[in-house]
Length: 170
Image 1 (tube, one colour):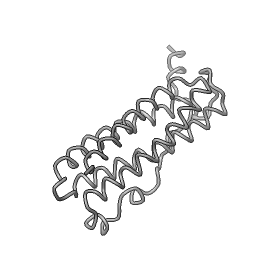
Image 2 (cartoon, one colour; image 1 turned 90 degrees about the vertical axis):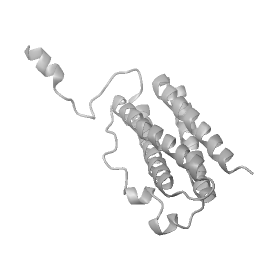
Image 3 (cartoon, helix red, strand yellow; image 1 turned 180 degrees about the vertical axis):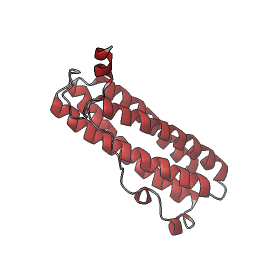
Image 4 (spheres, helix red, strand yellow; image 1 turned 135 degrees about the vertical axis):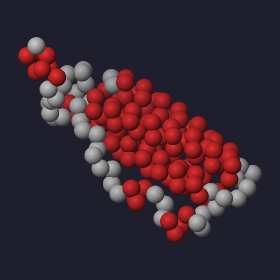
């Protein structure tokens, strides 16, 4: 039973792991995924704030859509953080100040539903660009797990972009 105890002891985050991916690649991927995780949190918070504060004729569709989005984004953050861990790195313990992610309180009341949608579109587009680049690098490195995860994330974000744009289309 002593061997079982030794196996259960946690190991340092900087231990050498052998999962068929280069050490340098894993470090670069963990950094990129940490950026993606921060972008995911930013969108989660913004979507939640806009969910609470949207007014006007677009209230119901945007209220419902942002709720769907912040729930999906929150779940995605766990998946992304766990992939960082699987690559042998610590998931970020701090993601910056949450206040930097959220729109300023005195500005939210001045935003129209269209302003909110345009802000979310800009953040989704920025996230998609980083995800696509990171997925391509994962593919090149043979990291099919990260590439697959990012394909799922890209699918979500591109659909979110389509839906957000459709709400404000004239």
